[in-house]
Image (cartoon, rainbow, N blue to C red):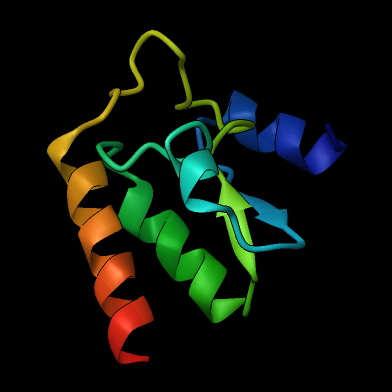
Length: 88
């Protein structure tokens, strides 16, 4: 972890971590927290910075016990990705 990430965590800023590759569908659940109140801001950060992908795992808001498992959002994401694959 960098000093910048440590400072951001101390101040409770969300800290999405840039990934150099796109997550596989099977990896999404273990790397993203769709129910976090900061998720859309982190998604905006990734888009504005042209990131290939990102993970929430290093963020101060990430917690294994709070992270939802197999939520409706995750199921909807799978449907959207399937539609994208069919119609892209």
